Length: 224
Ligand code: DX5
Ligand code: ZN
Image: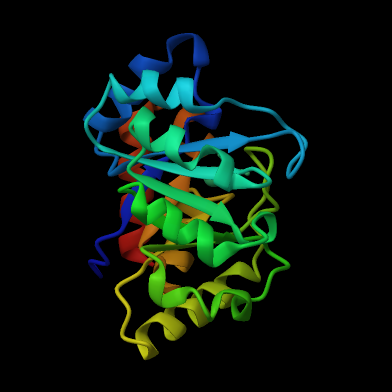
């Protein structure tokens, strides 16, 4: 069995928000490496989710890394507030930030790890200039905005090219994938070089439970 040491990041988008604290604690106890939190603004993506208040509430339930995925226009407006709320890692979309280099620096200055996300239609070349400054690169394998969408197969090749780009540059930037990840897709993205796998519906919608779901995805990632 290949041991690719992937990290699993359950996305609370598919959790039961009436019991959010417990659902986060259960994921952490069940082997989650990060808790992935999707902030949506109703502009960059149609849906509205939550903001720094919920990040602060979740922070009280776990010590593990809070991996914040901002699907928000002008993300610079919320960086400091999210740092104060307890975010560890903050990822903004390249498509949503006019001054991407500046916001990446702002995230780091606020004491967080800085990530950039790319939509399926956005080429990797978009982030060539900021790549050395990133702690995390998020390749979206669905169009952002909703949980439970089918994985876009072309993402595997994009992840492989992102992996090569990072390796060629000698960068330790974490390569994350988000959208349609579950036991059926985890193997191919891990083999292509993804090292953080976000999963929402496959974790919180699994009738076998959160811990079993995390284990199943990890095993699939290591066996393909
Ligand atoms: C989608 C979000 C994802 C979402 C993934 O825009 O960024 O994090 O929760 O959901 P699944 O894993 O169900 O595709
Ligand atoms: Zn996400």
